[in-house]
Image (cartoon, rainbow, N blue to C red; front, side, top):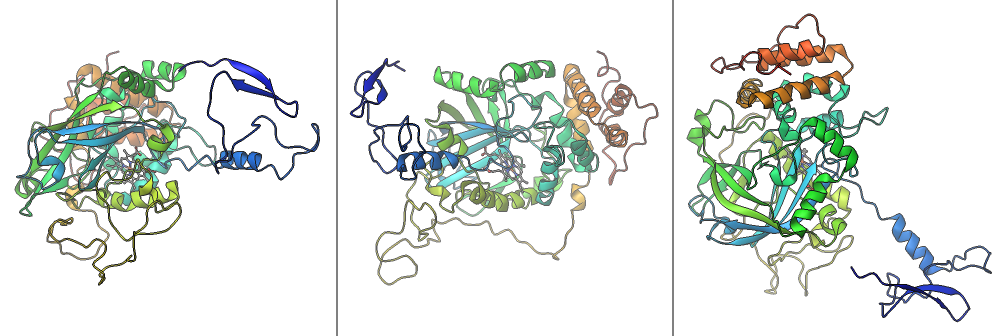
Length: 534
Ligand code: HEM
């Protein structure tokens, strides 16, 4: 930006004004009134009290006093960018979603990356899950793919979400630690929640300290459905793969970076995009039918499980390019409202109980955070396709029905009408059963995939997991919780559990935790010792 010299000018009353050299626009109030003096409040005499009549002062301070909105209850710290999604080939056999019909079709997107646990001002390189939320502005309305950089989650049912998040956030009496999993409440909850073991292995791995947003994968996590024009459904898992490949830092680096530059990930994305080095990801799909779902040894509705890529190869279907930073961080990155329930015709939900709960939660939380049911009127949230409905009024309404009619059916021939042909066709999945609070037996194996993940890691990666678990659990002061964690780790991998017990100075190895179902016994264990050297 050009630097303007300043000059001192005397006003009509002899008062001094500091003005920029050259022509500038006149400062106004929010009502558009031109402002004569923005340095001094209106007083009785130059040393007297400020008068209530000073509408400019009052408006300026009033507006400042109301600048803050609630930060997101999770994923408060984030950074976004604009770009586009380009479809490779038509996916018409699988989905009627317009954005997937034509090769080369470009759909505008806004993406927000985030950490989960820390507050808005926390550090970028916390050991944490990263959010990877994509808003596609499709011709049939917004599609939000609200994912993470880890393909599984801590819990199987959304009713446990407040508990897992409370446990990782600062403890209520002391108000710390912030943005860290290294404390008693977190490990207490985890140690009492065996379903979290698979996720914990990922969170203790290098995936949780990425080098930058540009080197991360992203996952829709849940099983979704694609539905084609013949109303045929195919199950799908969504996976983003970065063109640059994956890179992480080690913990030692993360700690130093957090101290030296807590904005490290923001700065990286800003610098890359501003210099024309646009980051890119490929969208991959794992597509499968009911028969595959039934034959797979885990429940595809269980969000603590993956479908390994060796079992079902992901197919690349398009690319995401981020090529423009927001003009305004607050207006766009802070006010963007992602919601899992935003899906276009041709993309539908599965019965995953975590996804079903999220579909309720996001609408609720956006009202709280943005303060008005009209949050879709904010440009970053507004669809970029024609929009017609009879919703009206409310705080900050920017658009209302035009003309006489604000209801349907009506006899005036005015206003939009529902369309069975073009409207969202909920997939008619046959459902029946008793109304019960139960967890399916098919969700009960909490250790096999945790083991699979651990043994899939290279020896240096396994060592990083050992170091992370040792560091984190050593911050957990309660010996009972530490031992309980070791009892789970022994079920995941005996060498791992024994190594952690040893490093934590636990003399007598606890019994492996009771398991609702035994972990699979056809999986190899890690090569002994490879993980505990160094
Ligand atoms: C925010 C992902 C589970 C409630 C977010 C964001 C992401 C995300 C990426 C940040 C969006 C942004 O950048 O603005 C996930 C994933 C989950 C999961 C991948 C599991 C697979 C849940 C569950 C709930 C939940 C189970 C509640 C039942 C929320 C809330 C926000 C949020 C309240 C804050 C939204 C806002 O204020 O804008 N989630 N989440 N999430 N999530 Fe989740």
